[in-house]
Amino acid sequence: MNPFDLIAFDPLAAGRILDTCSSAVVVLGILIAGTRSIGRAIWLVAAQAAVLAVAAAGIGLAMHAPHLILGAVLTFAVRGAAVPYLLARVLHRSPVRVERDPYLSPRLSLVAAIGIVFIANAAIDSSQLAGSFEAPRVLPASVAVMLTGLLVAMTRRKSLSIVVGLLVLENGLALTAFSLTYGMPLVIELGAAFDLLMAAVVVAVYGRRMLTVFGSLSTDELRSLRG
Image (cartoon, rainbow, N blue to C red; front, side):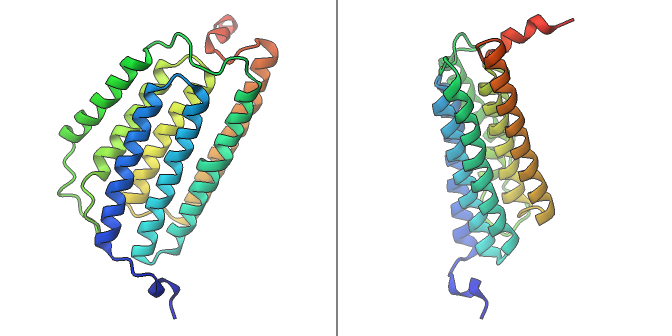
């Protein structure tokens, strides 16, 4: 007996889960843009990854696709646990736990992130998108999350905050891959997870080095290294 047959999961239910998860990922991205606390932003990114894992698992169960189930597990393990843990360890060593004097204030960032969501929904029509699931919010949500991550990365000064923005952007790309192309080949998913984990390790190493040399995680300290 196929183990997937024991789970009653139809494409219509999968579409609802996709739409709900897409909305949750967008809301979490907006909260990240509006917070000054670096620690809170790190764990909001972890929550985004957990929601992505639920979305990938829902698609995998509906399509009877074991590689998507494994992709959901990898998403939660790497994006939702390992990477946030490494970033939190670096933050624990830092004397500064909040984003001070960002290029764009948290209130304006919040307004900009909400504006991005409305613009993405108005500009992108996914109703004609071919696919097995009725999830019209997925594509606009994916674009909105990617642009929100870019906004965070461009308007923050602390290196960990910039990394958080890039992780939000990466979560938007993952939402697109899981939801619209119904997952990537397993070897690509494994490679992407490994690259993301290695990038987090590098960030952790250089973050500790910045704390040792400069006593801060602010990228302003790196301007003195320009030739």
